[in-house]
Length: 138
Length: 387
Image (cartoon, rainbow over all chains, first blue to last red; front, side):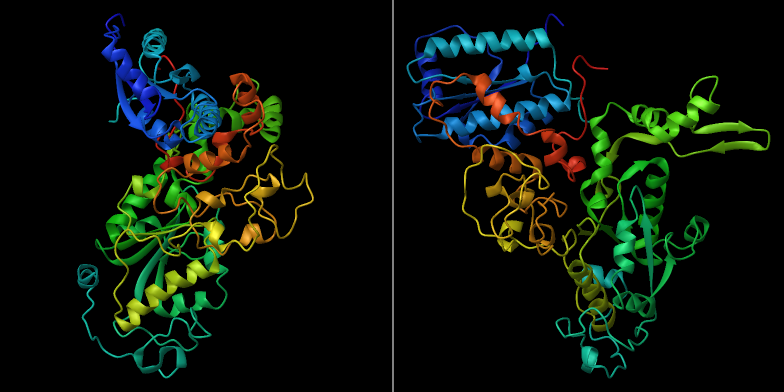
């Protein structure tokens, strides 16, 4: 298990978190390369179906990153997102996943360092949890 | 659709049927006539009777009852077709089906999910012997209630619960099973020979995950209108050579969601508490979601005529997801989560408060995926750390 490199899908909102990730890159902050970013217009644009699809295709963890509460480009998108993700976390827990495999975090456009820290922490969490319990499609 | 018609040996402009009734006047079967779905004195089809098999896999029998329940319309089936198998209402044994040529049965109507080896064997046999297979009812289309068993670890857990924990069997076990619980075995060596029972599978599947399915007829059970549409298509095909719908068609559904069929007044209110229908005095005209009753109408395809919501019961989603989404459950809980209002302290509040709010929804997986578990993206319970 020592050489387990998790696959992580990160949904970043266009206005804050994607810019934050960009900032982290420009500042040359070191990060593990286990994540793949999918840019969405808003964290509320992340349909729970996408998250479930990511898990069903074998993602070891899913991150959803959005603007801080109160800072949403669309005023209230992230409030919707966090209600959905709270509910989705209950659902994946019922499926038997460890709820820590799904992370919701707020990263603003200027927080490259927070982006780095979030990614590092999440990769550590997933490495500790091990590979996804979803069996490979036979 | 020429292929299907050719497959079934139908020629264009086939012989006219000798019929004088209004609904079949001039050889045309008028679907929207007052007697739609039922034609008195329906003649025997020009090409001879077709063969129909109706089978139940893991089903409650409600689907078969719904066919019988189609009043006088069911008589048309008798005129139009020979029923070669229908466990609930007619004779016809496995060996009779086995003796038939491949493709000898015109239509097999199969209800129920696939949860044991017998179900799988029979539907594969019927598929082989049939030209058309129709997944009839929600269990056959989407897994239905039986597929909720995918949320326990395996079939043994189900068997163990059923044969040792339920009150009636627990009583039996404590009285008679002195040396360990009696749980049915799949094979038993009796003095007279080996006795076998079907193997129960860990994962319940929908019909189309096991065999090729031509048409889907959802509903728990399908409504009379849906059955009429199915019968119309069959009668029209058999008598008038009207082409069948394209393969894979879901019969009886529309392009919109149930909300558009539901006559209730929608005010798009925010809700802060979830109620069960029996806990509140349900306003007969206001949208159930507006009253805090979880209703799956927004994620469910229209076609049933909103029978449940009209009488104050929330939609449970038996007609399946609307055409543009795959995940009925994800689709509805996205909507439900957005119904909770943004609070004064939302910008500053702790995440645990949001979790508290959402925890007012009990058993989200069981509620939102009540009928579509077998077709969900993640079809069964998983175990962290692997088995």
